[in-house]
Length: 260
Image 1 (spheres, one colour):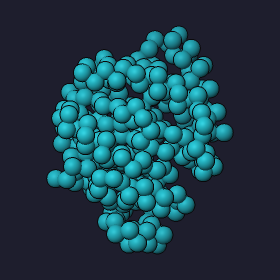
Image 2 (cartoon, one colour):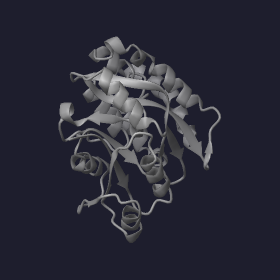
Image 3 (cartoon, rainbow, N blue to C red):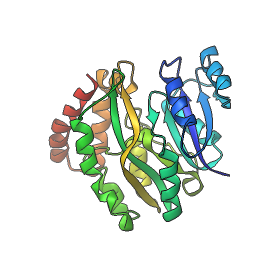
């Protein structure tokens, strides 16, 4: 089993897919790469051929949860990063991951900071990302980041962990990884369940990912059809009493403006 695999989830013909592939293929430490899709096209297969990446097709209806589980399943590695086609990975992503794993062999989750990209430009300052960085502070205490309450603490006031920045220890976590019924809050709910399991969450608090925000993003669509509001409210109800949930959602909804 290889140490790490980027499992790129390709959905339709994204204009950002090739940039994502390039950022992965130019890592300072080489990693295995696979391309997975439930919406096959000549565009996707052409990029797979061009960059010499194995392509795996899921012949069922597209579903974020099932597409992610398929990509996770097809990756034959200790750690798997479900790479989102819109995003770019900093060149030392894999190097940072493997260095952390060498030091913390019980690491079940690797993640880190990110920089927001809007209209192909790096955002100078993003209040939401800054707040999330503060919420991730408990994970800097790596000597106790294996404790369930430390892992849960970074999820109590919202999902402070950037999903595409995550690498999951497949050997320790097994499969399927994603079992949540949610669509938008799939990653938050998954992390909440993983926080209950043995293992350590390690966060490299520096940008390891360039997170793209654009008109076609699934997050923006979830805001517009109110599914984000519904699911995030339900997530808070798992952790807080009703009156607290109302207060949290009052402030949390302000983050939706990041996608405008």
